[in-house]
Length: 316
Image (cartoon, rainbow, N blue to C red; front, side, top):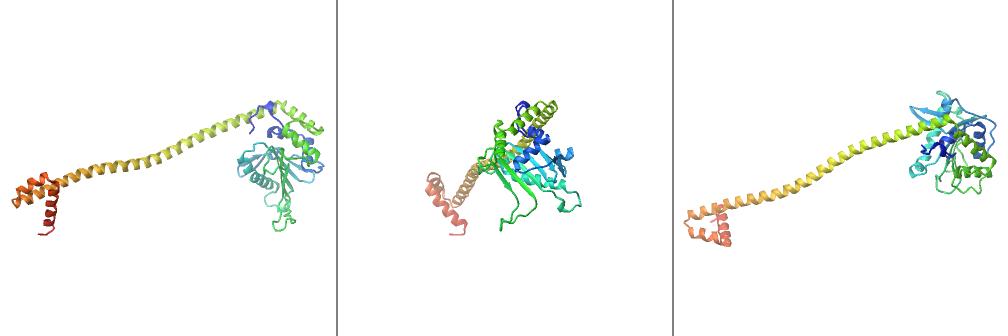
């Protein structure tokens, strides 16, 4: 959704492009220049289908959707945002549009030969494939023999207003240049510029644009709120997990510290108990001098402990 003021809109803005293309002669001439063909007559399908194509509850608003006198279907979209996500999604978006158009062209139970030839056209203010071309046309061909076409009559074309269109047909080059620069250089682009001015003087369309802009900002705010809620919840989860992890680590550290402390304490108690048993052993043999000497001489005490341990083990 464009965030410009209504007065600042140009043909490259999809809202104005869609409104200008409601002029039948302008729309027909635009298609003829883009595709290099002649069209006898175009018709807009019933209004609802022209604005929305719906499938399983999902809807797509199309900038331009018309049929000509031979029942060929044309869908043209203006695409401005050229960030990496848009570029990556564009091929599948064209496939999605093609699928929805086909579903609406054929009634349930009808045979596939009722599918009309169709063009899905994207006019991009960026290079969608990064090769500098002003036009990229895609049709299904056999990879093993590129001269063999599938003949499914589905054509997808991407125009690049920033491409090198020196070799483009003169009228096409001027049309792409006008979309890019907003400076008309031909009789037809002068006519387009006039239609853009008239569109921006339409009070009904101004109100419609403002409603869309308000809806866009409301949805953006709601998305931010949802994002914050999800972020807070994810933060809580991550916080709890990190807290548990840190708690376990701190617990281990404290446990080791307490364990060493308790171990030292227990060691002291056990050491005292062992000395008491040694003293009882020596006293039982009336070796009072050894008890007194061991209290002062640690090495001698150790020697007596070895003797005592040997005694306890059943030695002599």
